[in-house]
Image (tube, rainbow, N blue to C red; front, side, top):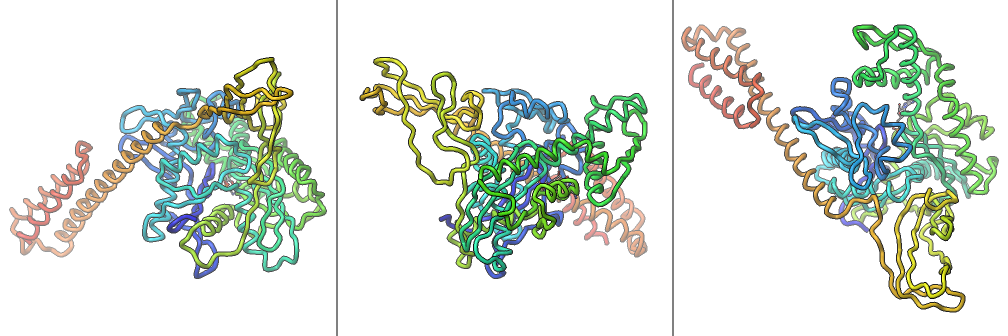
Length: 587
Ligand code: AMP
C-alpha cells in the first residue's frame, strides 16, 4: 500500500488525462488543466526562449513544427530500426536519429542549442505536466500514481514508461492496461444494475494504439479473460491516410509537392484531424487552408465515404483483432453481455457499424466517456492501492500476460513457457536440456512474443548458467545464475542524468515564468498609468516637465520590455519599483 494520496494517469499518444478518487462523492474526478480542458495534448515544444507542454505546445505546432514533439508513445521502448518507427519517420516533422544501442533520439533546438532527447524524457515532461495539473487541483504535490499503458505494450515499452515516470518524480504504484482501467470505470458505474456474471468486451481505439479486452465481472472480481491489440493503430493513422490522400490531390491539381515542407504538412494534418472529427457527424466537409504552400490556397472537399475507403483495411484490422481476442478467451459472441466503446477513435461511425455487424448487435455501449474512462479507472486502482482513502469500492482485479513468454532453444525456436493471456501472477516451469556432452555453460535468452522464431520476438533478458551439475538425461541443475541487464532499458546512471536534466528544465521553466510575470506587471503598470494621465487629466496637477519625465520613464520601460537582451526577472521588477517611486513622488 502506498503512503499518501494517489492519482490515475492515462498517458495517451495524442492526449493525456489525469483523475483522482473523491471519497465524499464515491467516484473518480477528471481534473481539468490550466486551460480548463479535461484532456491535455501529449505535446512538448521547444523554442528560443522556453519549453512548452500540453495545449501551449500544440497551439504553436504549425509555426515551430521541427521542435514540436508528439507521438513519443510510438517511440518509447522501441529501437530505431523497428519497422513501425521507420514508416513514422517520414511523416514526423521533427528529426529522430539513432543513438547508443540503436535507441531513437529526438533532435530539437532549444534556446539556440541542439539537444537530443530520448522518448522517456519527452514522456517524463508530459507526466510532469499531468502531475502538476493534479497538484494544483489537490492543493499539494502528489507523487503516487497508477499509469496506464496499452494492453499490448511489451516489457520494454512498459519499463521505459516506468523510467519516464521516475524521471518525472512519480512513484508508480502500478502500471495497468488501458482496457482494464476502462473496465473498472464501466464496472463501477454499472455494476449496481448487473445480476450475476457479466462478460464485457472493451473496444479501445485511441489516437495511436488499439486494444481489446474481454473482462468477466462477477461481484467485486474483474477478471480479464483475454486481451489483444496493436500498439501502432489508431486515429493518427487515419489522419495519416487523409494527409497522404490530400498531398496527392494537391500534387495532381496544382502541381506542387508539400512533402518537404514540415510547416505545410503540420497545417494540413491539423485540418485533416478536424475534418475526420466532422465526418463523424456530417456526410461531407471541405478542408480550406489559405496559402498552404508557395502562396497557393488549399481547398478540397472530402466525403465520409471517401474517408472510410481510405481507411478500410485499418478498420477491418480492428475486427480481426477483436476476433483473435474472442478466440483466445474461447468465448462466442453471443456470450457477451456488453460491448463498451473506449478511445476517441471509437466515435468513427464506420468503426461502430462494422462492430455492430461483427457482434451482430446494435446496442454498443457508449455510456462512458471514451476520452476519460481510462483515467477514471486508473484513479479507482490508485485509490485501492493507497492508504489515504478509507472509502473505496470493493474491487479485485485479475489481469493477464498480453504476450507469450518463452526461451530460445536450439534452431532459434521460441519455446513458450507462459502462454499469452495467462492470469497473473503466475509461476510456471520449463525443463531444458543441454545439447552437448559435458556442457558446463549455457545461455538462456528469454523472449516475449508470438513469433515461432525466437529472435523475431522481443528479447527480455539473458540468463547464463555456469558450472551446473549434469544430472540424468542432462537435466540442468543450476548452481549459479548470472543475470545480464536487459537491453534497451535506461541504466540507473542514465536515469540519474535525465532526472538532473529534468530539474534543470523545471528551473528554466520557473525562471521563464518569473520573467514573464515581471514583464507583464511592468507592462500593465505603464499602460494603467499612461491611461491615468490621459483619462483623469492628472496633468493639471502635474507640471509639464514632470509629465515629460514620467512619459520618458515609460518610454524607457517600453524599450526595456521590447528588448530581448534581458533574461532576469529582477531587471523588470527593479524598473517597476523605480517607476512606482517616481509616480508616487510626483502624482
Ligand atoms: P484518445 O487517445 O482516446 O484520446 O483518442 C484520441 C483520438 O481520437 C485522436 O486521434 C482523435 O482525432 C480521435 N477522435 C476524437 N474525437 C473523434 C471523433 N469525433 N471522430 C473521430 N475521431 C475522433
